[in-house]
Image 1 (cartoon, rainbow, N blue to C red):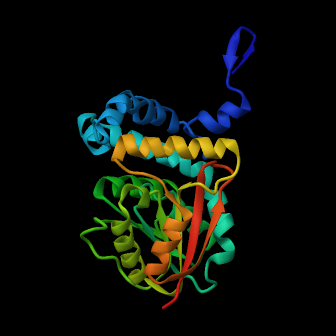
Image 2: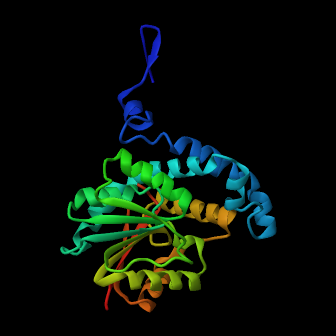
Image 3: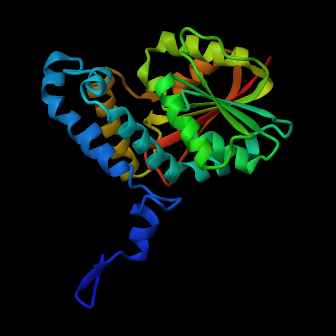
Length: 271
């Protein structure tokens, strides 16, 4: 803030990043990191002693009414930082004939919205649990994208995906599962894609990140996954191996600059 005539005023930086009415607002990330990360790390020492979370994230959410909304607002704040770069870095790989996108575990739906803004002929389906779909529908309506983006409630392990998609997004999901479950999930995603379709995975990738900041953030996030989910980060070689097993070729990694520690892994369905 700045002081003027005995009063404190917002600076242009504050207006851009911390006012909720701003389209680039990261305000939702403040309560997210305060309650969903820092408070949860109060259990870290006990998690380390047990070798598993002292309180699983799902349990913590149930114990704190309204916390799921805080979680999604934090995810939206992170997406606002990353979405435009993600779309730009993927542009050359999106098939020119792409018309349908599936966003698995897409939560708030902001990534689907940005892809559809970049590709006016593209329509997207955000597939996630009911509480996430509620937030997605609000985001879609607020962004005026009801005509291109829809939300479908479901469970990736129970409900079937539709088929005939050209692009599938799998963002911040595979870290939550063991390798055999990720192979199962990728096989299901492969079945939903057309031949030549594109899969885009976004994760904190163990190793193969550039710069000390990205390295530290990736390792901190790996520790956070352990404390929250009994989960972990995986290396590019792990993910590439799973893609090869499930009908994808040409896997390659793209490190993101605006969100250090995050990377994309892309692959193309062969048949």
